[in-house]
Image 1 (cartoon, rainbow, N blue to C red):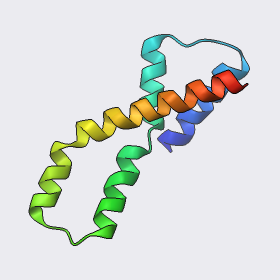
Image 2 (cartoon, helix red, strand yellow):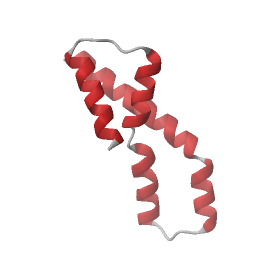
Image 3 (cartoon, rainbow, N blue to C red):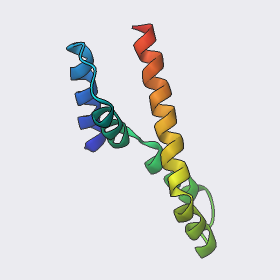
Image 4 (cartoon, rainbow, N blue to C red):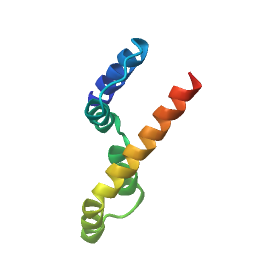
Length: 83
């Protein structure tokens, strides 16, 4: 639900040709990120789960969040320059 809401906020600001403040933009990106959901799901569905693997994934969650944020920013920049 949060992802859909974030996309709606982004669409409204784009349609109104408004530029959100950096804090608003980053907050919306965090809500729109699907990488932190999809990557662990893929990991858990594709391998036998061991306790060590779960602990490693929890330790690397910041890396997953930051890489997802970079990917989302890159995608939005691409859309911005194409439209």
